[in-house]
Image 1 (cartoon, rainbow, N blue to C red):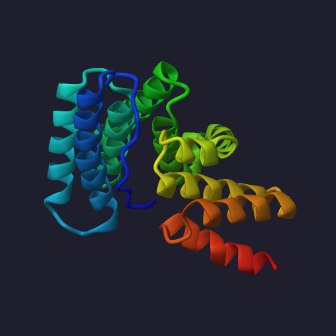
Image 2 (image 1 turned 120 degrees about the vertical axis):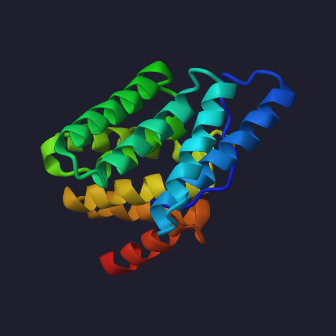
Length: 204
């Protein structure tokens, strides 16, 4: 996954001042969430939960916050040695992410979080087909969503990079080249863009 810093729009924040406040709170929650993934800071998990709780309290029912919350539950479950709690947390996390996407199927950030989280799950969760379908949908609109401010460019590049990897697995080299090229075009310096450039070079 990758660290994001751009605001995304949300239908729950309707007036301009509220949209700006929502974007700022989402940015704080997003950065805290990705710090859990990218660092070994023991306080990162607590900070992420607090930031997401603040976002959800300010915007009850927000699908993006719900998707991040669900993903964080799965991250917590991965570090839980109690089997019962692991299964319980995993089920709750998956349910929250599915609920977020069902609630707002056109919200790209919520769908990306579900897809990217599912990408890293073991096969016995049986989420691969859904994950690939999510990335296919995202790739079909990610560049426009990024251009129009509905999706952070870094996230759009990551979506193209994941989709390119899926197409490589399907032996669709031409499609994969297109996806990797789109990732570089959208956000060349982002983690997804940098990785896509390497994969594009490897394809020849």
